[in-house]
Image (cartoon, rainbow, N blue to C red; front, side, top):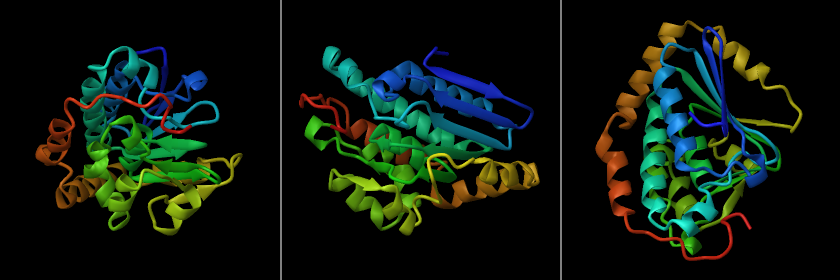
Length: 235
């Protein structure tokens, strides 16, 4: 585990909070591995909630780390792929609550959820081509979530507003910044847990989420990429 992530558990509810607000919750390998580990252990829960502290849900990979250790790009991409498939395959209903921005790897985590909440004014997308990085690792979870929108989201290098993505069905609930998410979480916790688990397993079967080749291919194709720009993706 890492001190940059807070884990809270009750009988049927698990909450993961990214706790690096000073760097906009940018992801390092330990943080991503922690998300994977918790998701793999949360199969007996009804709901797994992933949030970020501060003004930004997640700014993607830690750019400073990638500059200092160029080989870390491969490690981060491989770890993110594992986290995405762990969140998608977790029997619990995964809810992600996005405020501010979900950039690149942060957007990939959001697209891995069963329920995407976004606060008004939030932006989501993959503006990483200028860094020399491909966002293809997100496609196994983005395509089922976004359907026809997936191609333009990973190719145009833009951030998309929460409002726009809600109109396309990618964001499922659009809330104001101070709205209480219990209105969404509580009904999920009151469902028949076994029925919800079985339903998610069948959804994963039908959309290919159990197929490792769909996740491994983009990781292999992205090996050797190196960060080359001086600015962070969101700047």
